[in-house]
Image (cartoon, rainbow, N blue to C red; front, top):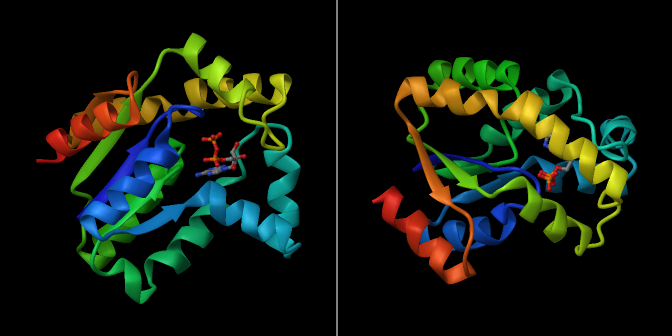
Length: 182
Ligand code: ADP
C-alpha cells in the first residue's frame, strides 16, 4: 500500500502513523523527521532547511523533492510506504506524481486527518518542540492553510482522498483510519 498522510500540524499524524506502519508493515517516510535528523547532524541540507523550519516556513520544494526521490529508491519502500508530511505543496504533489508515474507505482490513497484550528493551537502549544513557540506555530498553521490545503482538492479530483475526523481518543481515531483504508 502506498499512502500519503495529510493533516495540519498538531493533528496527531505522528501518533497514527506509528500505528499504521506497524499494522500494514509500511516504511515510514516523515519529511519532518528527516529534516530534523539532517539539521541535528549539521549536514548542508540540514543547515539550509533549519533556516525555514525555525520560522515555521516550508523548506524549498527542490530540497524536499530531492530527499524523497532518494528515499523512495531504497529497498524498504518497495513493499509500501506511508508518506507523512509530504507532499505539502501542489508543486511537490506534481513532482511526486511524475516520479511515481515513471516507476509505475501510483498512490493508493491520500488520508486526511481533520482537526479544527482552535484545537490545533492548544495541542501544539503544549508539546514543547523547538518550533512550537506561539509565533512559529501560527506561521506553520498559515503555511498549512495556504500551501497544503489546496492538495485536498487536487487529490479529491483524482478520487483517492479519504478524510477522517481527528477528534477523539487515539484508539477511536485509529479505528476510523483502518475503516477507511478497508
Ligand atoms: P508539523 O506538521 O507538526 O508542522 P513536521 O515535522 O511535519 O511538523 O515538519 C516540521 C517542519 O519541517 C515544517 O514546518 C517545515 O519547515 C519542514 N517540512 C517538513 N516537511 C516538509 C515538506 N514536505 N515541504 C516543506 N517543508 C517541510
